[in-house]
Amino acid sequence: MNRKGNGSVGGAGRVVRPMGTGVAVGVTVAVLVVANLVNGRWAPSFGVATAVVVCVVLLVVLFWAGGTWADAGLGAASLKRGARWAVVLVGLVAVGYAGAALLPVARGLFADERYGGLSGGQVAWRVLVTVPVGTVLLEEVAFRGVLYGLVRRAGGTVWATAVSSALFGVWHVLPSLGLATDKPALTPLFGRSALGAAVAVVAAVLFTGASGVLFCELRRRSGSLLAPMGLHWAVNAFGYLAGFLLR
Image 1 (cartoon, rainbow, N blue to C red):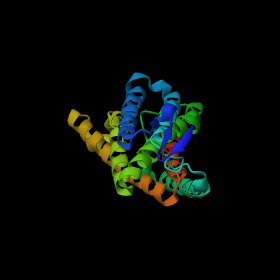
Image 2: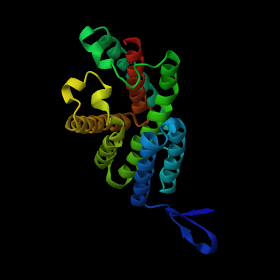
Image 3: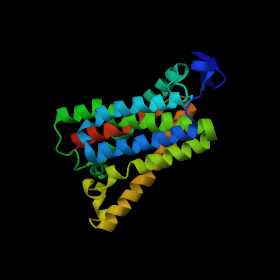
Image 4: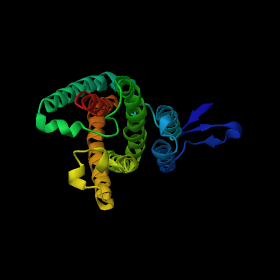
């Protein structure tokens, strides 16, 4: 198949052009809506498998729209730089968690009913498999990789950061529905009422949206998806470890 302009020449001289960016963004959002429902409602136990499938589908969408590995933050030229950023960020988070764990007043923040009764093996599975694949790989490829790359190609970095971060916040609506009661440290703040639960969800969406801005900035500065991946994994994985060790 011969290349011509931004498309390719198929049979009978027909030009086959890649998917438009707007359509690709729409398809990406639709896939993420389904993935969110699968993980949060329909089949949460298949989260790791769902993450792998969704990542492959979204990368195909990106390439079909004319994107590249670099647009996804996975270009070979920036991987070493991204890896260096990731190592530093993981180290900083480890130091931060260790410091907080040594402060009696901060230890209660690590308590979480969702994993307070997990065994050591279950925590290891989450730290080594569920978090890096089911959470970090999926969310970083989706929001700071494909979605960010598509929107940046069309509207620039500011729009890419805004759209990616806003949708990243909305992505956390389902996971945060029981936040006010799952985290004992938050129950006195939000209470156990329906209103308190709603306020907790809004707070979680705003917080994760702001986190998305930070992750996008790491992606921009490092040129690689590995930087936000490192920070994202460290925050989640060390949270499991701290909650397990300090219960």
